Image (cartoon, rainbow, N blue to C red; front, side):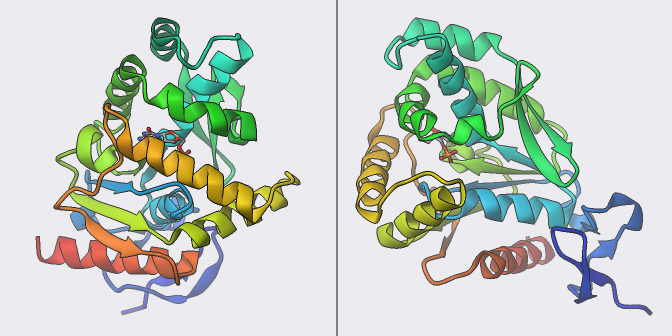
Length: 261
Ligand code: DC
């Protein structure tokens, strides 16, 4: 029997891979499907900079799953509020925004793009201003309720890799596979520094250490759905791992879990 081919996230063939994966030529760039995973939800939580987004995106591409970036949804609400001069403390106005705006994800080529009222805001939601505003916005109970409802709707058919702060605890408590990613504060700050410098944003390691410390505190101590590691989440410390190694470890965890449930 021929070995299935290994395809990276860009759709490039790179030798063989897990024997359990079936290569679907027509589904490129989502080349693998593990039949035992059909309809399942994989939830990944962890602090900012732990590598959740990149890991979840690559994992979803390898499994042929939809990537649900819940942070992007909170960022979209924060962006809308900033653009319309709505205070990050105005609970009622923020809830109204969260209920009203249209937020969606669409694959454009092999990129998962974020749309706010049909406008592509993929880059705009990553600005330092939005990053600052999103913590208080996401702490609002009304905003969270609206987002959690939408996230469950989006994942109702399964085949989803969801990633955020409360996907293992609140949004998908029944998720089939739960993973908590973590990394040291310094590693996370260095990753953020590289990310910003790629975008041409000037910042320093000290600023990133301070910003992450503030965000960690905010995300972990808020009364609504604080960031927490559930007892049934598998912990993966990514401090000394590359993104490829992270994805590889999770694929192995997923494979082990579905072969011995
Ligand atoms: O993962 P991120 O940096 O894009 O998340 C942006 C913010 O949204 C972050 O401050 C925490 C918040 N968030 C949340 O409260 N719940 C989620 N499920 C995802 C993100």
